[in-house]
Length: 167
Image (tube, rainbow, N blue to C red; front, top):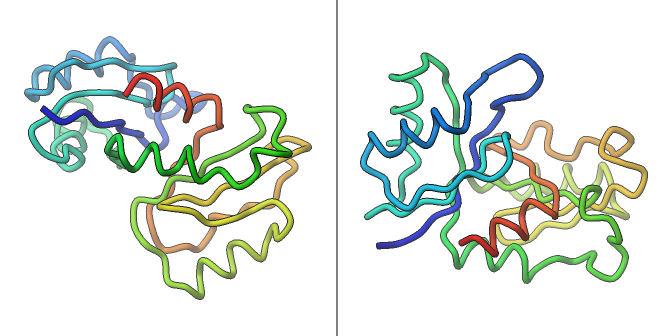
């Protein structure tokens, strides 16, 4: 059965959209998924499913918690392409400051170009992702994913590589 990395957007940020990882694992098992593993408390899940599980997961979360939590689902091949495509490997010395803004759709060329222009020295597009090296930290980095018109969820490089290893 295929394995997937599921990135839930916007859970457990401060006091909003709280979902305990044990509850999430139980919810996903009840929805029929297997080999479920969560990583950290920020909505990173590895699981097995017979088909791409995004909509099923979103529906199960809404039904169980009342929350609307969009997710981006990555196959092992897609996640590996993101890792292999890292354009800043020679300068990104701190994985917590290297961001992968994972895209849940394909923005128009114009919107993508405008996004990258907000941080031309440190942002590049890749396979379903915008890479952004944030040498002074994420809070100091320009927001490159505004107005893309597609779902985006960000993870730092440490999380991306850990998910790749788990998958």
